[in-house]
Image (tube, rainbow, N blue to C red; front, side):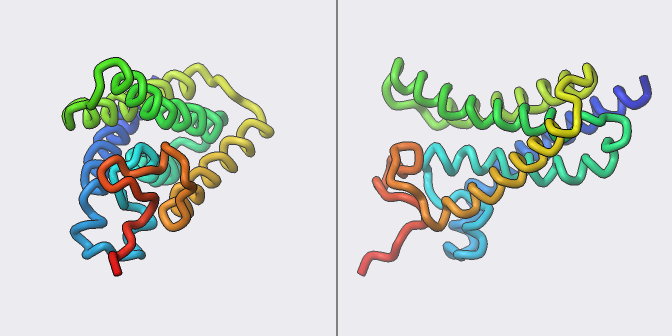
Length: 183
């Protein structure tokens, strides 16, 4: 029982960390003078993809730190974290496009709420999967580990080379990826 209680506090700390860091990552690129180095982990525009990145990269970082504490008691760690992270990532576009399709343009507070709801879902689902020891087994752990790292790499790469797809388009500038200086 002590491990579960400790995990509960860590998951709550993870939610707070993702919420705070994700909020800061919304502005960090601009604050840095649009540094291409900062673009690797901060939101470079207002696209749905970049909002997903603001959630995922802090989630990934916290996951790797938390692993040092819970690797032994939870042999399902990487698969559980990958599943909960993917759920949160899917929630952002699903909620955004569903609500904006139903209501039209969403106010800023709705976008912020979607972000926090997705972050909360990640940690609620993560906790449930971990304590029920769901998704056990070496192949699932390897797949979870690979998925976590693969997604982190994908988020970084797509900031520099964003595909010309609606998910990646900045609704304000109609551009993709890092803003290019106007010549």
